Length: 113
Image (cartoon, rainbow, N blue to C red; front, side, top):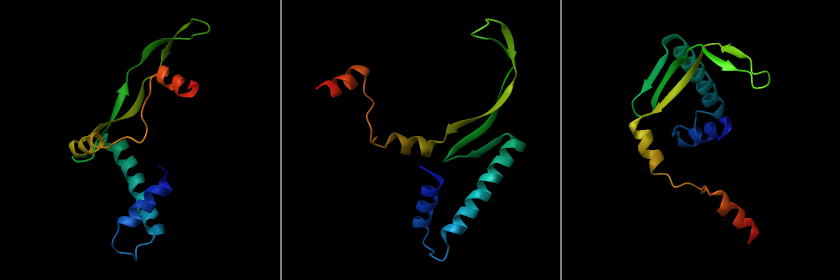
């Protein structure tokens, strides 16, 4: 789903038709910018129904250059971790997938038959 698709879905769900897609796009952009700023400053954003975003840090660790086999130190870095909330877990669990994952054998036999 793209940003445009999300804006269209939000616009379709809003009862007040005086709010245009342009306004929704501005609100969404502002909210996402605020979300990123708050996460960068506080390191954690929690919404009980949706989930928790938290900034985690990987420590410095040794790595190996696969070509030269030389050992190098990999710098520490920050990343965002997401843990789904209860309501999101329940909703995702109830979704029927449009696509089914096939084993390699099933996939090959589909094309050979």
